[in-house]
Image (cartoon, rainbow, N blue to C red):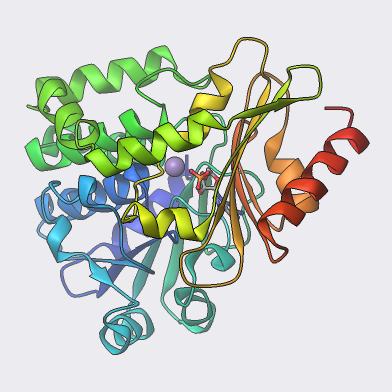
Length: 334
Ligand code: 5GP
Ligand code: MN
């Protein structure tokens, strides 16, 4: 948590007169949107207005969250987003560790003069004016709850805050399954339910949203899972043409990589997908125990993230990327 002195200073920055923006990472996920909107609703409960700005669009299955439709998407509203970041007195940076993770917003953030407050759970955070970084906490949305507690404002937690934070924690813990899910996580979830968050409604709005084409895409991917390195590593992939054929929409491949990890004996799963428009391959890594995919992705695939969940990128072809990946596995004894 921030130090008591930092909390006091942050508190003096949070006034209705100050312009406040909340930024989160490229390809926003449930935790990115949940923590950002959760914080926005908390500030509102204190009578303070803030705008949430994201670099690019986010999946439909997150657009039920209160005020998700008001999120400013920088790729569609460049001037508005730029002016807001440049003119802000306070810039909350949620669920990312480096300006390089927020696309075009990154350059603007570096140049902006507002006070930058980081709240994030990724490995190796960069420098900000105030940093609350904890890589043991499973979701930034949980950290927002801790921030509200530290401000002694738990009484302000209302239904909007509860729904957003619940969604962020639920999605980033894979439904309360991943390693850093703790008793504290569950206590917070219990509090959020008491404030009105409805587990069945939230789960159904977020996860029971498959389209037939997404399931067909999943069937295709599952049909060609390859397991290498004596059953320890699973490889999944999709080409651009396949994405087009199945009418790919943002978020359609969310969670595919986890199927690799669900195979008995598999310690690492990697999902390779050609970008729909640009010539690069997006990679998602998941792992178990002490297999550190954050380090692996930083070292070989221009990426990073968490020990057991990371992402990366390759400018090579899909097949070339997978070949390089297999070589790196051997070099790293995985
Ligand atoms: P996903 O595989 O779901 O896209 O991402 C898994 C985790 O890694 C998330 O916490 C995400 O923020 C992070 N991540 C994804 N892609 C990248 C990347 O290209 N660079 C870095 N540093 N982190 C990434
Ligand atoms: Mn997160």
